[in-house]
Length: 151
Image 1 (cartoon, rainbow, N blue to C red):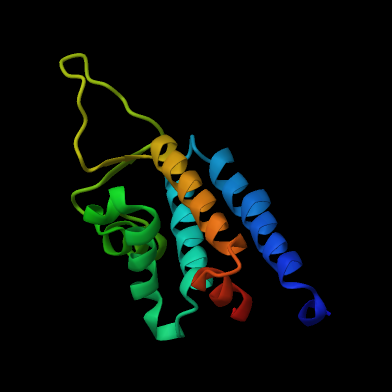
Image 2 (image 1 turned 90 degrees about the vertical axis):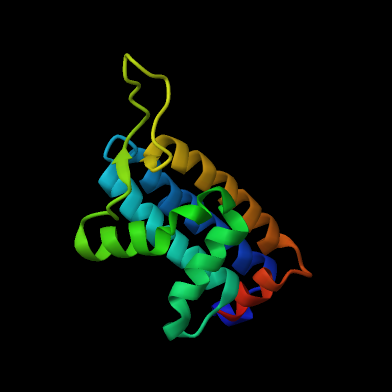
């Protein structure tokens, strides 16, 4: 039945599902940073799969490409290794990362380490990346849309 749906309906369902379920689940878990980052990493994996439609053995490449294309401010963190793989598969993070719900300022300083990831700020950037991804999905000339429909 879905094969007979118009492409715009399929794209609408993809967007709605990601928004109502995946993004919502991350948002309600902001105060639980481990859960929020696991869910964020899983969402990035899924968005990358729809954006690039890679063969199964190319998941790491598509994840890294999604970070580069949609979350460039986090490219230097090597999130595939230091967050996604470490957290999803080992319930830990890379040695140079720290996860929290929000920035906790020290009384002596107003700066945090460049390697501190906060669920609140990461979610805001991820939400903006999702908006850009959705713009690519609805653009009838984009490769992202073609890949998502093939998926």
